Length: 256
Image (cartoon, rainbow, N blue to C red; front, side, top):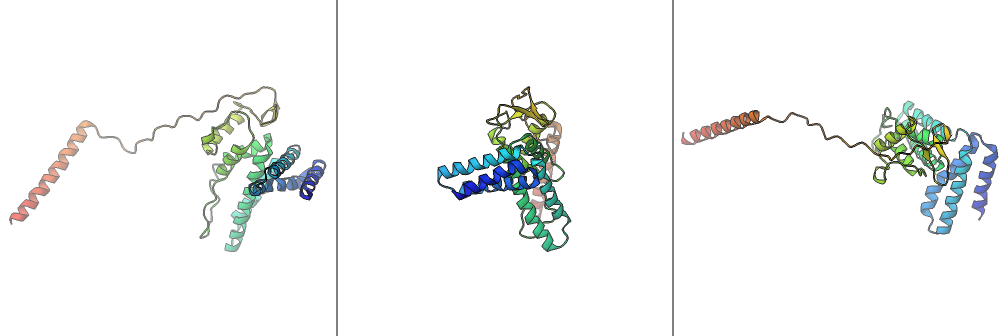
């Protein structure tokens, strides 16, 4: 198959070239992986396509700065969107930002490296930039926060260590806690098909993998204090008195 030879040729060259261009070309292979996989009915072709994507991810992992490359692309696209002044420029840069963000988090979720965990972890903690819609032209809905996209990408990483449970997978709160524990040294992490344990600085010899648990949610704080028994009786007395007075006035009006 010509496309297989072409893609594997790109991967082979990138292993030696390294640098931003190699990261860009390998990332393009990862970009096409989910879209192509969803369109292929033939299981053998689908498996072949995913195998090529894994080869591209393997090649990316050995290139220093592969995660930072994607982070910088996203930050530049966000800056272009924020500084656009005309309506046409805002629409153009908003579209470019959304496309860049999709490609960024898609690539980071497939590479699976300590650098990608760090980049995604910092994005999932991004509380200051909750939405990109400082300007939202008519007909353009919200695109979600960087934190929500990062939580989704973290849930897709091939992690074999303890992590948020299935129904918490895309919860920003769950992944913020998980990343905080990684960042503070409470836990390490590991990837499928890799016996090595990691922290954010790289390989470690000691595994720290406690069960992951979200703290129980506190009951909602009441917006007002409940009435004490004496106050409740007084309130009922006032209501009855007002009602009785209203009935008396209505009866008197009928008699007159």
